[in-house]
Length: 479
Image (tube, rainbow, N blue to C red; front, top):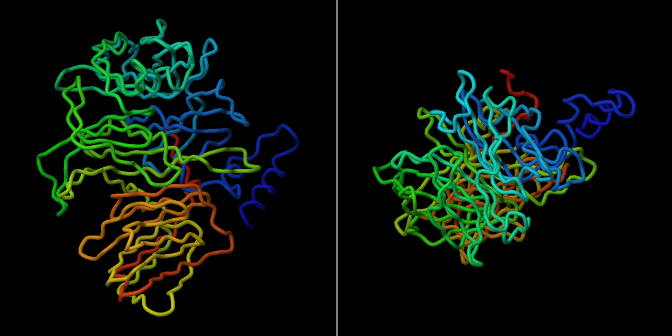
């Protein structure tokens, strides 16, 4: 039975008007992403409040529980999981208060109870978010994020223009981190100062009283700030570390002393497709893990007739690489995606002259291909109707109207493609550049073709992983 027929049959079996369809039916709709996160029902956009605590990953997200979307009814949606792949959606954490919707923000584990909000033996979780129209507010949980309370003296940070609810003028999207060398919390958020948009920096000892530290112009919303080791071209990680600052569209690499970020690179585009936005990384990853993991809103999707709207990207691990001409950020899917692998087809040393090579594939895919260019003008693949091509003359990987820069090393180019029911994510040269966008494969097209033009190219290796649905293996409920 196809997914749409399954959904209709399950909904019919659930009863008459007003009854709630079975959860399995909710995740089998024809346009439901199968290994990208989407809300059970309603609209989602920015991921917010990402943190790891007590063996669980917390995924909060901007959520309007009913459709169509209403910005005035924005809540913090909430899901938890143990492996970044399988998620269990919980009740919304908190929502509008006094006419102020709960907009984007971040969350931390207040391990030393600096805010004095702990009431039991568990370490409190503290969310810092924009109460749109009033300023920046706190909410906190003393039961592993199961229930949330509002801090009684909100807002904790009020700035000029808060009451305007103006996207160019009002401050929003606070990101909070603990800076160990200066023993304080650091908050950065979008702030317009003197007509210049950028990131305002603030410091605090207790998460409740914030002192201005400075302003960095040239950035917009959804700030993030973190430190990473720099890996050299041979893959070895040295002693050098750098800080990365980013907004919803670009990033820069530099140094941060707890008060001031000093860029050492010009801003670089994060993604070359239209879909990548509102990216955030998880706080409080355990030292035994050490990764910096990022997720984003995969926007501009169209889901007619569905009980949900919009989805998130697949979680990716970030790394900094010294490529010889500068330090760059790279992004690749987290290794936990292998938990979904159902079948693997691996082929090597495939010539690309003459008739294009073709093979059958499944519905959900993780495809990796390494080309030996051999002087070709063009190489690429078409997978379920998605044509991805490297234009050697232009130095670009093209998909539809999108194009991303690619610099082959020693005449080799790698591409990795994650293909779900309504999205495609393309990773070029191990994630040195990416293209992310909404895409709906033709239901009947289950083929992969390799092609080339000119030269004597070949495929050094092609690996096709067919994936199971993450929704068929729900996250364990430890609550």
